[in-house]
Length: 205
Image (cartoon, rainbow, N blue to C red; front, side, top):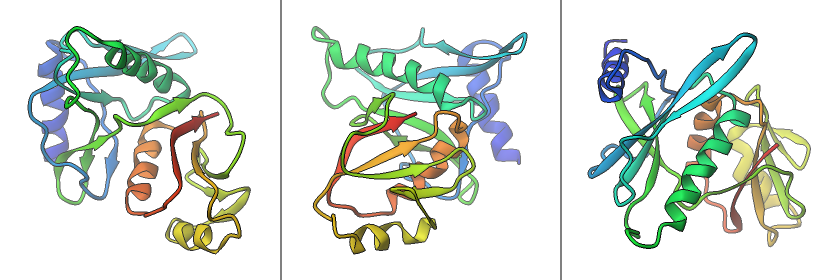
């Protein structure tokens, strides 16, 4: 737990106050180091009976790599609209645009005991169900469904390869009530799978 405390402490210092961002945890590192970066924070807030996502991007520089530090307790229905706004701002920048500046989510590698990063620059989020193709859905409990059929994570590639519709696009779908923690875990699973026809869109509904 010592390294996790260090990560949280680092985030608090970077924010310039004593607020915490509880990072998601996963069991492997996708990207270990990012340089020339700007940290952006999405905090977990409670107001009365409502949960809120509060964005702090005051230190973001459009020409740098953006690291989104998002509290793992937040549901996707609150996180993704804020992420979409940030993506749009960077994609629409003309005067100071840097094509090499990427976007990453941060998380803690519980095995390697280090801060890790997951790129998502090329992802386009859609707040709706896909209208065609094969749907690979992760629900809020961590269960995985391929066109409504429950499967295990280690069977995803096999099931899709064995379908009669292998030429159709595969759409990654996520329950809007899923925690950001479970979303990162799902994304780590997908990083280990090689599929030919995956859309750049991710569907949150």
